[in-house]
Amino acid sequence: MPSSPVTRNDVARYAGVSTAVVSYVVNDGPRAVSPGARERVLEAIRVLGYRPNATARALRTGSTRTFGLITPDGGNPLFAELAKAIDKAAAARGYVVLQTSADGDAETERVKVAQLLARQVSGLVLVTPAEAPDLAGADVPVVVVNRVLPGVSSVSPRYREGAREAVEHLVGHGHTHIALVIGEVARGGVSERE
Image 1 (spheres, rainbow, N blue to C red):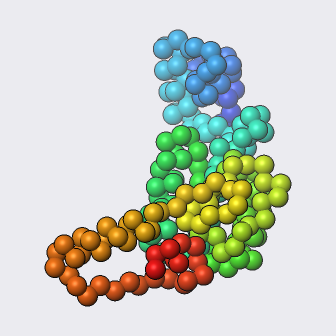
Image 2 (cartoon, helix red, strand yellow):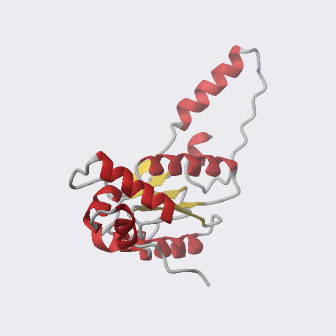
Image 3 (cartoon, rainbow, N blue to C red):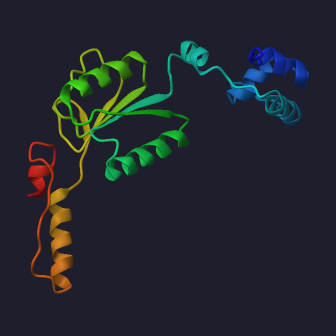
């Protein structure tokens, strides 16, 4: 049977400080803490295995510090690399990413958007959505990658410039037979690549 979770009171008792001092150390403020007290609190956290309760913090601050990320194909290496970069950027700012895949299906995508919004994510990133999602009531920032949707912030590659540079590079190296292989024409950005 697991023991009860370590609390701020346990950390404060072990470190010989008040629970307020523990909070100041864990939250990096709002008040300064002496280096000695900070060290004792950090040692108590390490020894006792204290983990702040993210749910309680979200209730108190009104922010889950979590982003929702929906990709069309979780097995596609391109989307895996993109997810990795988004996760790294989010972590550097103290956020966590909940990633899921819609498998290119519009209905699955709608369900996933609703599920992430119900989890009170702080923001939502949709990669190449199958169709314009229903974002009514989405009280969080939304960014769409690789597709332009009216009224929604978006980030898209410059396919024409990229294709031109790639062809110029190949021609510059003596290649004259160049093929273009693209995905489904209905997907965002594909027609621009042609």
